[in-house]
Structure formats: C-alpha cells, structure tokens
Length: 398
Ligand code: FDA
Image (cartoon, rainbow, N blue to C red):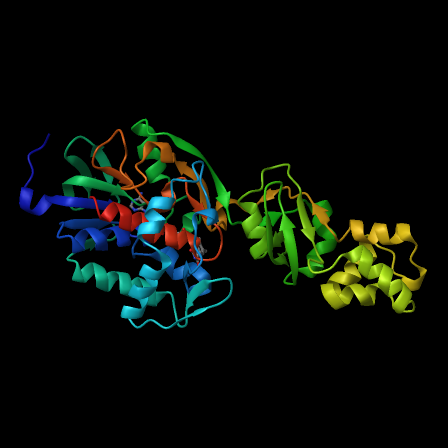
C-alpha cells in the first residue's frame, strides 16, 4: 500500500455522494467529532433535492411509517426510521426558520424553494466541520481495514467508507450505478433494480384515443395485483401519470393490468340505476361528466359506451358502462424508465447490512445508505425520510 500523508489524506469517514443521505450522514458524523470528507462527481451538491417536489422539496411525510416502504425485508427499515423520525427533520427545518406547509396526506413542502433545504444541510455540514468536494469522481481501490480511494485530490484513506450514491433514476442529474458496481465487485448481493414512481406508457393502439386528454386529472382508486391507491391519475401524451399511477408503478410488473376505479366514491351500478329512475331524460354523457370532467366523459362515450338518455339504459347497458369505468382496466406496455423515474427499486440486499448501523456485515467499515439500498418509499416525502434516517443511522457509528 502506498504511504500517505496521514494528516491531509486520511479521514475518519469518506462519504461518496453528496445527496440527501450522504449529507445527513456527514452532519451526524461531523457532530460526533469525526473528520469527514464528502465527495461527489457532480458540479453541485443535492441536485435531486433541488429538483424535488416541483422545486419545493417534499422533504418528509408526517405519517411516514415502515408500511410506506418497499423492501425485500419489511422489518429492515424499522430501526433507522424509529431513531430518526419526521419530527427530528421538522425540528431541524424549524431551527433554520424554513417556512413549510402540509400539501396533503402529511406531505411537507417548503413554502419557497428546495434550495432552502440544501442550504440548511450545507450550513449544518459547515458547523460540523465537514469538508465537501464536488467535481470529484472517485475510484475505490481497496476496502481493507484502511479504505483506499483514488480521487482528483489524490489518494485518500479512511477508516469508514460510506456509499451514498443513490439509484439509477434521472441519469442526466448525475445518477450512476457506482454503488451497485462496487457491491458486485465485493460480492455483496444486489437485488435486481427497476424504475419506480414512474409514469406508465400505453402502446399506440390504446393510447391513440386518449392522447387528446393529455393534461387532465381524474380522482381514482388505482389498483395493482397487490395494493391500491386513492389518488389522481393524469393522462399524458405517452400514457398515464399522476400520483396514483406513480405509486402503483412501484408495484406493477410487466404484463400486469392496472384497475382504475374512475368513480371511487360511489357504486356506479346503483347510481346509474337510480338516475335511470330519477332523471331519465339526462344524457349518460352529462351524468358521467359530473364526476369525470366533460372531456373524459365525452371520450369514454365516443370510444366504449353508447351515449343515450339514461332512461333508455337496459340493465346490460349499465353493466357495459360500469365495465369501462369501475374499474377501467388498462395494461401498460411499460414504464418511462429511469429517464423520468423518481426512484430505483431494488439495490443493495438489506440482508447484507446491519439495520442499526447500515454497515456491511462482511466488510467492516463499509456502509451503504439512502436509495442505493433496497428500500423504496411511497410517493409523498417518504424517500427523503429514508435518506435522512439511514444517513443519520450510519452517521452515529462511522
Ligand atoms: P441522491 O440521488 O440524492 O444522491 C446521490 C449523490 O451521489 C448525487 O449527488 C450524485 O451526484 C452522487 N453520485 C452518483 N454517482 C456518483 C459517483 N460515481 N461518484 C461520486 N458521486 C456520485 N423524494 C421525496 O421524498 N420527496 C420528493 O419531493 C421527491 N421528489 C423527487 C423528484 C424527482 C424528479 C426525483 C428524481 C426524485 C424525487 N424524490 C423525492 C426521490 C429522492 O430525490 C431520492 O429518493 C433521494 O434523493 C435519495 O437520496 P440519496 O442521497 O440516496 O441519493
């Protein structure tokens, strides 16, 4: 091993990845008096934080709980999440006087800008004596007792090496497979990865009539084979998006259908039967438009349902209408993939890690945190909560 200048090139902790998890880990370790260096190959830190929540960063969810996470071992998340809760992060946000609000369902967003969160993390890093280097692609040379890395700053050594390089989504923002590749090289199991929280694509044939609905949202209950979400769907020029679809996409497998109840608050058969009696002259299209919006109702009637006064609907006509709405069954041909996905499902197998410290069981001093790990949150601030909690967990032990 090359001889190194211990004072300048040796760190207690080197963290690769200056995203949400990496910065939180750095703060926690720095506050414990550890000498911490964070390296990122991008030209600035926290790019995903900056672009998150439409520029307002949905930084946590007040109701975040283990049930909001997908992981091959559902118990794995419990320790870290219980030791760093949404309220810990909210307290930090309040200490920095960042204005925020609940949008819905416990989702907390900045009033002003995601930049507030990045600045807060950088101020905390500064106060904890953390050094951050951007534009710093690294190579891990050895992971023995003293870890050895090659970086633009030269050879670096550390006692604890933390991999916080995130998942594969949005390669344009600097996402790489660094963590997965390092794990494979070290024989650490990596579960198959795929895009999550991602719009679905419909093939041309199914999409053609729907294209003109691009931009319209409808309140639904959207169901996959294993779960359901009460949220809006959004018609897009390639297929479907919106919170219900993004949530369902994390559970969707190629070939599966999505069942979309377009009338989540009513029993449509009972409603139409009642309207047939009470408003027999009203056009079916008009009735559907009350709940679906005019354009969706019109298209549904042009494509799949014959429009007529509801008084003229037979029982089998009603059955026919219901079969296209409650649920509307649609088979996506795929997803938009990592190009637009918010997260990556799969990743470092949690069986290889300690749930308390995020340390690799077979590689002392090596840690994986954040999205690179096989833990994926639901939409609504849960993914950042995992980044904060796993970063904090490792930061207590590195
Ligand atoms: P993250 O991806 O944040 O950071 C990884 C860092 O590692 C990056 O800075 C990257 O440059 C660096 N890196 C990668 N490869 C490297 C290499 N080879 N060498 C050096 N550095 C390397 N979640 C949420 O809870 N609320 C929200 O509002 C949103 N919104 C949202 C919008 C969009 C468009 C996306 C794409 C994602 C979200 N998310 C979200 C998800 C959230 O952004 C994500 O789960 C966290 O950022 C994950 O944090 P990590 O720190 O693990 O990875």
